[in-house]
Image 1 (spheres, helix red, strand yellow):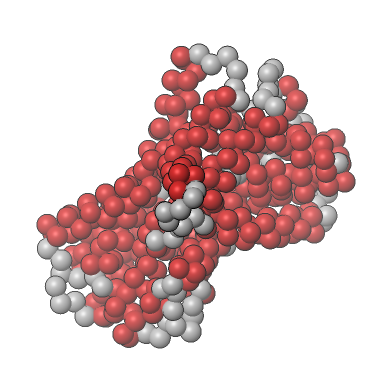
Image 2 (cartoon, one colour; image 1 turned 120 degrees about the vertical axis):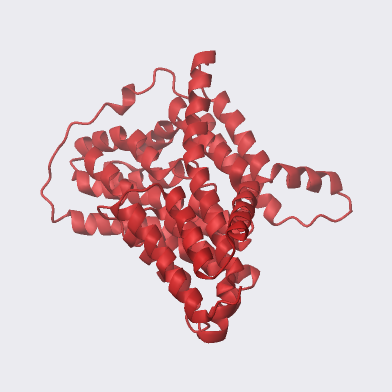
Length: 409
């Protein structure tokens, strides 16, 4: 395989274009679009078909090893919190504390907290009833309330594991999950506030239209307490964060360090969250448990095949030595964090999915880290956050989340 830089670049661009056209125009599932791109790039750089298949399988398996359990457990946690009404309990508490004057800010904060374990689209559907009710009670334009809620959910969805885009990018680039969660929360707060402030500023120009919403207070007969509602969200984050800053050395507290190191593994931490979520519910039956776990597994499966295909595409790009070609032919060092941001923003704008955008961008950027001057632990961490920010760049008619917000509001 002796492909020139020009040959690699041409087929790299063709592969990305095919992904965008197939997913955005023809609505082909991202898994198949990414796998087709694997063969286009592989054949274009003169890889034997057998090598393309082997490389793609290795990339698929590697990313599954890193993320398979995490995505399934994170999805399960989100489904259980929705079913038990924990998200509504958290939302009602925040709304009560902020009062009518800050109703829109309350929805932003609610989206931020509820969005830590819950995907943004399903989280919006669950909280929409409360959102409409608060808009009616406080005479706040629905557009201000809806955009505030949506951006609160979106900020954490794009920046923080176990959400699939951030988790996949972290696994591809090699970033510690705990440090990404803590730093991602810090970055997501101003992102949430920016969305809220823009909603308030732009929404003032929109006439007030009062819409009828479902009565969120009647959503549950036996809702969990606030403590039990928020515990499954906070405990996994605390465990993962503690592990990130532990150094395992023999000493006085060796047992405790090993204990927290085990609990801080994302798989164990999320498993604890799932158990705590079950504790917050009432009247569990075999039928309900079977339905919820089946729903979570099916939802996670759809995400995992996309992430796996992204890993396969990344392995093909790695085999093409695209990073080496770029570093030898193009001066990327001056771009730094702007490069991963722009790549992800372009992909997001073109094909609509934040998850597909950040997974694809991570595959492109990972071999370019040395050329970008980002091949340090902090550089890799900031690179993942930059891609997460790029995946929030623009949400328009080709984005499913755009239509969830528009239709439900």
